[in-house]
Length: 412
Image 1 (cartoon, rainbow, N blue to C red):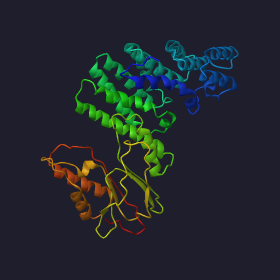
Image 2: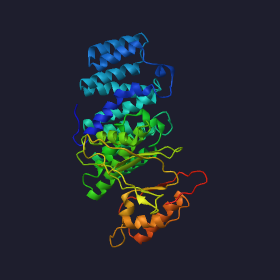
Image 3: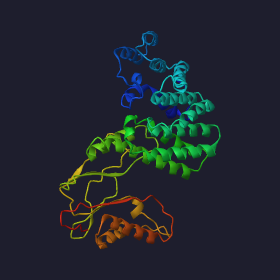
Image 4: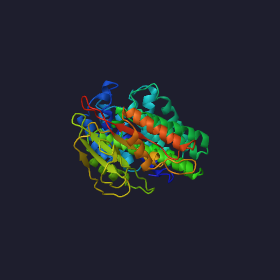
């Protein structure tokens, strides 16, 4: 397959998207009878031939079953596209993808899932051939079909926006490209928690990540590139975390899986620090794993708050094969837990002096606990006064948790 060196991931991922469509399709709400039926024995035979890369047998079986009304023409074209892709025959693959798109546009097929993935694959094919205008001519009509059609997974609008932005970048349309990349990022982030994301292979989100971050790696400033790259790295890690956490994995296992995934081809040295905790709301038991993150502050001690004594572990994404160690606390009931990013303790004033761990800890110890919200508001006001008008030098996130026993009071 011909792949443009500057967009190898985009072209390969978009082309591969179509190959998963049947498995994902069976999880979607049915649009009509022919498209919602389980895979028949005849279709399984065609699929097996396509998976094996046997062009002749795939075509013979597909055409035969179409003539016998045992297979739709759209699915026949899908398997033909699959087998040609296996043999790296891009022009033949593209011709069958075009037929899938035409069937949807003509109204002879009503399945938006097949249409959308076919459009992505065809756009990826054109990008791989450096034919950016043709790719846009496929992606833009597909994008226009998204708003009125809730049956399509919501992140796909972000993918089409990113495809269009990539093409505009290569066609020397920087303002239009930046606008579409910004929309792609916002749209993808908006639907991060949507249940329908579970139907989409994790690789699809890399399309947005790759294009948004790579946009600024060319003629733009390093600062702008780093800003986008950091945003996309965070989005990628968050998406993976949501996927693993939804499976009920313990914190240490989540760290292991994320590290294995994020160390693959990590030439830029991306890494993530995390504090992952799982609290039993009945008993107060806390199971947690720290991955190179700032130590939280926990209350309930004679000092009215101390940094949590824990294993540091390494940040996620730096070294493959690490085994992260989890820890636990029997109960944190009535003991406030304050978690934060280094945008707090490393916040700078006008003279670039940092807020510091000691100042943060003193404020927590001196704050009479009324509610978790009040603790956050008190700390936010303190760091704002410390900056004294200086621009924030880093993102800042804070979270405070306290499980109350009946008739008890939380105390730092």
